[in-house]
Image 1 (tube, helix red, strand yellow):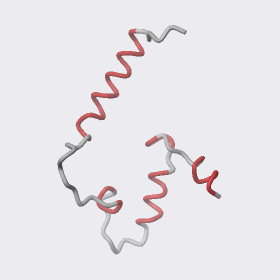
Image 2 (cartoon, helix red, strand yellow):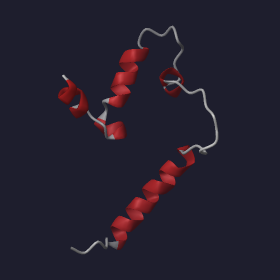
Image 3 (cartoon, rainbow, N blue to C red):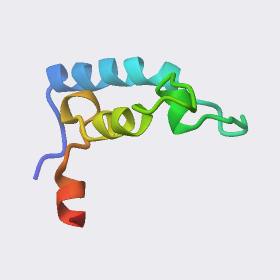
Image 4 (cartoon, rainbow, N blue to C red):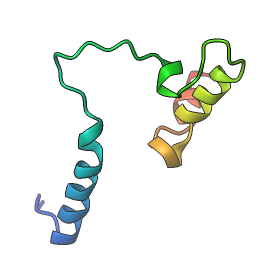
Length: 73
């Protein structure tokens, strides 16, 4: 098995890393982020839970999809 990748695939991966890198926080930085602050919602927003589930279960947005929930149920 040859572990090498094509130059086009390497560029694609490096571009993706460049997109993600600014969002990675330093390891020693303490944060008070919650699900609600991540989604820019207030605590009293009644749609916060459904918005969060839509965010988590959106395979196009983050790649998780509904399969883990399907397996749980």
